[in-house]
Image (tube, rainbow, N blue to C red; front, side):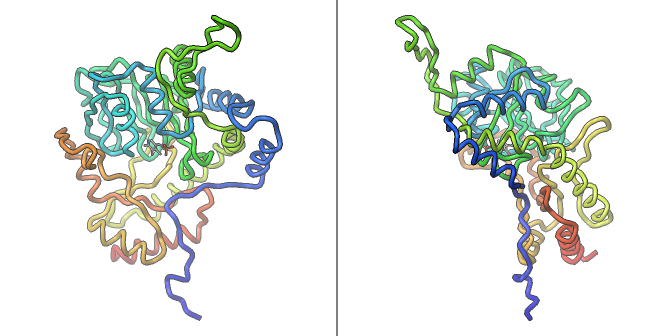
Length: 366
Ligand SMILES: *Cc1c(COP(=O)(O)O)cnc(C)c1O
């Protein structure tokens, strides 16, 4: 029998964990009366708000729509300036561009997150990113902007010394994503948490066309004072999210255990391990980003061995849509040269993890 590497199961960098109870939760909605914006949405929003210790949660069709909704609710528009990390998914910057705002990039520090001491004056909305699930401390931000929207797409289940990421201890709103590789999934989906009722109301209008009941001419009458979108999440998605949320703690424990095992078994290899969460806080480990020399070759050799690593991220200002941006981002650019995200997800077993470690040892000649 052939023992070619192609016979080994492919190990992805991330994947969802779906059990029978998740499936049953979705099927139950299909048998009921509501498919969109019914009782499951309300229950999911309440459960998310409780879990992250925020007063309000507003669900959206995806985590990009939720960032867009947060920035719109904050009144961001043409002439405004948004600031985010260069080392993120494009949505962290695009959300401000959708509204006609300009975007500036604040370089990272050793945490691979935005250096909060480098925020320039004149920023209207700051979008810090909890990169990889690292719990950013937002208690001290230079030139504190009017509005802070945390992009916590990677960080549901992470916590700082101020409590769960999402409680908005030092921000106005926090956005999460439920894409399949994220900490929990709804297929596509997102949510914004906030302690501000006006912002929550504005986001609810924004996700449903801007529709605002007036009751002027009768119960049916409404106005659309400002244009909104159809960014609703369905009850099918929300039911899946509610079921997934019950497992969040177990998922995070698994991710942290896998990360600790990588930390131990990769120590001593010629690579840089991901930054550890500071004392009193908890890392979400959405991804496990190492840095190596000769990234391209290491990446290709891992793929040849069936280990489907990924790179997070090419810095946003290096993308064509941001051509012309001249913000200095030397640290993000340097980090990008070496970054590789190793497989990490709750069902990654020890044999598979050992295959990843063994392959790295071989490739790096250690
Ligand atoms: C995934 C992600 C988003 C957007 O999420 P979608 O649900 O895919 O739209 C935003 N920001 C970051 C950093 C992400 O990783």
